[in-house]
Image 1 (cartoon, rainbow, N blue to C red):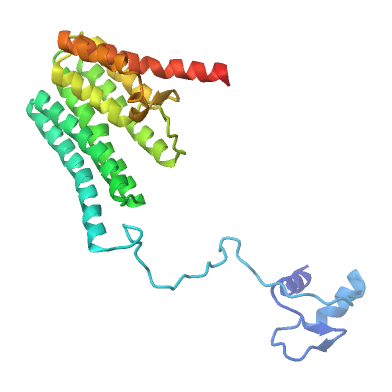
Image 2 (cartoon, rainbow, N blue to C red; image 1 turned 45 degrees about the vertical axis):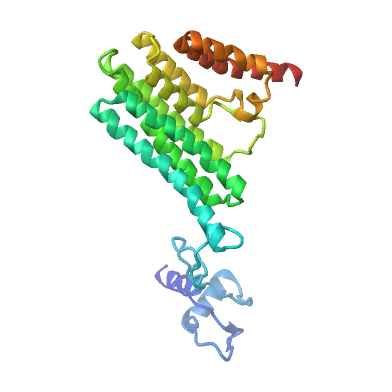
Length: 303
């Protein structure tokens, strides 16, 4: 048994360049001991076939991937012709995006000091700059993937973090702290999911899939700025509902589509704002939130 195992080990680890006892020139591998060859023929029959090379290969080692030794090249942030004029336009657009980001940070600092209404006004300015950078990028012809990603990150800071912080600061003292924290944390989490989904989803020119983060932040900021007179727990429930509306699959009309509505529909909220701006604002927000499920039901019936 000991000798046969030695022979088997030699067969598995080396190539026997031998046929009928003759060594094949050009090989430098070891052949099995001739003392055991006859015994193997007697025990197992004549071994007239060649034994192919068996190289030990470790299963833990993956095949080495080819190394790309080409020099690293930076991708230009602004595609197309890179003239001084286009660079200036590109810088202007990104300055608007950074302004929205800085105003969001300022809103957080003001909310920490207790100036919640001023912080809410900063959020409204964030909404204005967020709409301005996209419009300028399309108008000036400097839209780029870099600008889209930067806009998404600025939106997360201004609308996904600053907005719930301002709302939390406005709710402290009127509702249980845990309830305010959970509802505002939902806004941050759903805003992150909404922005990530928007980045990887095909774009629809007519409807949003869920309430956009800009719209949700504008509603929260205006609610704090004008001081909508609702009970604290109702406010907490409304904040949580708005958070879930952001990640819903209900279709919500874009602003360009809303501007095509008949003029008399715009006249009603304008007159209502002159009578009672708080009540009118609450009715407009509720109507917009309800429009999503209604459009969804209409699309399912007509499909």
